[in-house]
Length: 251
Image (spheres, rainbow, N blue to C red):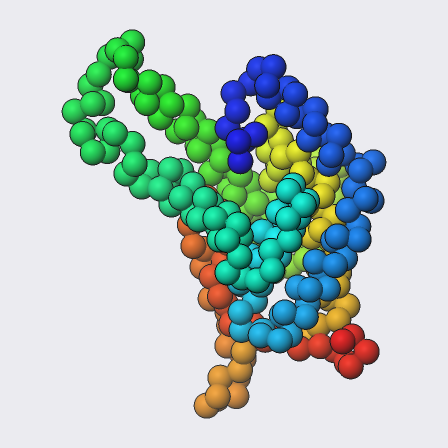
């Protein structure tokens, strides 16, 4: 988190150099055993309590981060550090980033009239910088909803990525070109994230049946309602999906 908010300079350069050494492509194979272990644990927890798949997903992401960065293994969902990580993300998403009212000017509106040069008015510069970054950030989801690039963008049509298109369109359709950020602020963990997501998704497809819930009265599938909890960290609420192993060999 501190790396993301460090101003550009010698410190940020040193941080990026160390992060590149730890998460560059040559280093990723060293994480394979860890990724496999966490993926297996996720699948077992998912089958043990499939209705809690959102919590299982959050635990997978949080536990993997703590293991990779700090070498710490959370023992359960109530783990102290896993809870602290969740609370930090919640504060960032719902109070700081979303303008939840923790800035002094939110309590004393008259402060917005302070001259920029006055001691204590530094929040105005921070606010402008944050606004600019947030405006850039909220444009990213718009890219993935551009109908000129993705026909029916809100529909689940994974085969769209198998279509033969020109080079320009292919680059625009590849979310990896923008979802990890740009330039000096590009996520240094991109390679590890891609590897973990690929293994997790491939393992789920290979071992699980994933279906929509069925209405008890009509016997018809119930369409999941996709809703996002906040505009900063795009995480869907529980959609009521049903999971089961494809066969006993998968277990």
